[in-house]
Length: 98
Image (cartoon, rainbow, N blue to C red):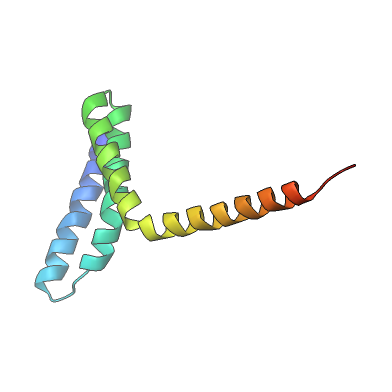
């Protein structure tokens, strides 16, 4: 019963976005950003309803979408981590505890 209510809410939201598009309100950027998270949510919902294959596929596609959206941020965090790790290695090698 709760899953039917959730599906009803999701369908109403999607329908309202379509109506807003016809009225001239464009939310393409927002939907493009939220779509991977929606896929992950639907995948988790499918996984919890014992639809392991469909849930796993949706979670994987959603995760790939999230990684593609945040690839610049992930690369920046990786670069900062490499710099911090490199500096810590230089500090350790210059320290001689005789």
